[in-house]
Length: 599
Image (cartoon, rainbow, N blue to C red; front, side, top):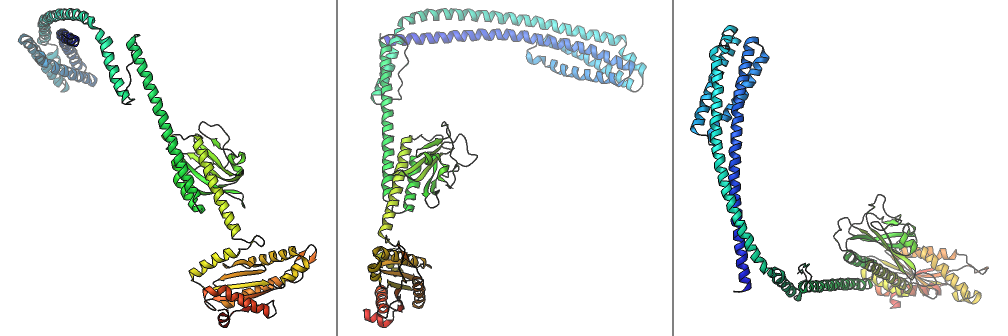
């Protein structure tokens, strides 16, 4: 027979004997419980019958006292005694329900009948006393017949208790005998079980060898399938099986560590990919609005659990101004001085709150949560402060994974680089579209603006072409620096005249151009006369020398009043040539005849 079969039979027999032993013990215990129940029943009935007899004697005394004194207090005491006796009588009348015999019931019935008669006589005496017939009441309660009935009731209760004691002793003796029998059977079964257990000990190796090997085999199979939820059994035995279990545990720990490292690498790869995609989108942004959209979309995914704001430095006002936010931050103000942030002061990331003990920034709102986590990351490029990335941990983000500060620093660096590139592109575009000498827009900017205005075609557009008179004479007499000073002053005058949407340009050399959207030809002529007067009123000195009076000639044209949109500048230039030919320092407006001449 196989070893496993033998051990299984032995274990089955042991279990069966153990169950049998337990059953006999339960039966013995039940017999003892019956014995105790009989004793308890006897005690309860003895107590109840004794209390009834005592209460009846006490009730008789209270009734007699009331008959003698007639006071309400004695009557009340008598009624309370009656109520208490009635309750106990009702309980003792149910003695049949607990297994009382016919003799006991008859004795109890006789005793209770006598008690009822005594109570009837008491009621009659009380009623007579209440009517004022004291003599009758005294005669009823103090008569020899009443005393005989009272003694008879006590003797009947004693007989009931005697018969109750006899029956109880018989039941206790029977229960004790049964309990002794079952206890003996239980002891025999226990002895057999102990003997079988000694035989089972011979096969202890099943528990010591076979069972651990089976568990270890299952764990090895699951670990081979990379199921690291399988836990090797904790075997404290010092032998080959214990060494095997320890080696499997080390193999599992190594697998878990390798899995953790792979998860960290995947998370790092995903985060770097997210940062890379965000950087690409930011570098492709042409405007600040495009940049804000990218930051608001990507930053909450990189800085999980953090709300935040992006601030840009407004240089003219020397203030950090919010340009976008995400996840509704509440602690930092939307605008503040750069000196209010320690990160901007030091040029390094600054973290306060939570486990970081440091000086809080002044731009944080008063009354903030002391346990909150605040991070300020300066945006810099070429050691120049461009803005600030502010982050605060949300109160409902306790389960969010904690991002490494390296990612947050990389995020701030990429945003700072994108802001710097955007500013650089804007500066280059502005430089490409502006004249460096006068600060006015150049010819390239004019072509772009003119194309937009003409494409719209929703309102009149006038063009004012201007040329400084005898500019070559100024250069020859005072030098080119003096000529540059004249051009700068003329440019400043034109810029001061650029109101109501007007745009001033340096057309080339000493020629300037002023676009006047929405103005008719007559209105443009009036504006030209105004500018000509301002230029003539200028007084320019260069190196202590007065350059004299500066004058300018103007040509004015308008579309669609004078010419088509594509001929606006040429028509104004033709009118300027007429002004110079007519003696300079004057304004000449184009007409339709001039348009045909230009054509």
